[in-house]
Image: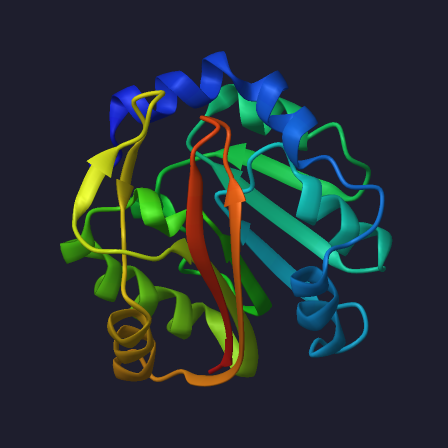
Length: 197
């Protein structure tokens, strides 16, 4: 297993606080961009769905949404959204036997060990229909370390992440950047990339 048990324990303990922090009545620009690139009534997989904030927007837009998270408490929250089918699982348990029009990995794969990420990206590419859409968000930087709450993060440079996506067979179509505080209150630079298979 490649999950960090302490990170999952913290997400379980802080699930309600996290849900309040990310609650958004309207989709953010990254969600809207992702939705724009999808066909009608698409089948979407939300990898590391957290409390289901994005998954809810996808379902409200008329899409079929599968969602997975390693935190049981996050899955319980995500399951409350109409149209979202959520279950507990780790990155090693992605539903590789299914095919999706879109895979959403918003600040989830940054909790995976760096060495495992290329394999996960290859699996995601194989899970997508031809020209399927992939979104990934990570924190920018180098190395890996724990935040003030104890969650373990892997940081990526833009060139490193872009190279991994291209090696996995993706073509990058959009990039967005930001700097915001997370659940720990610490500010971090981040990047979101959207790509097609």
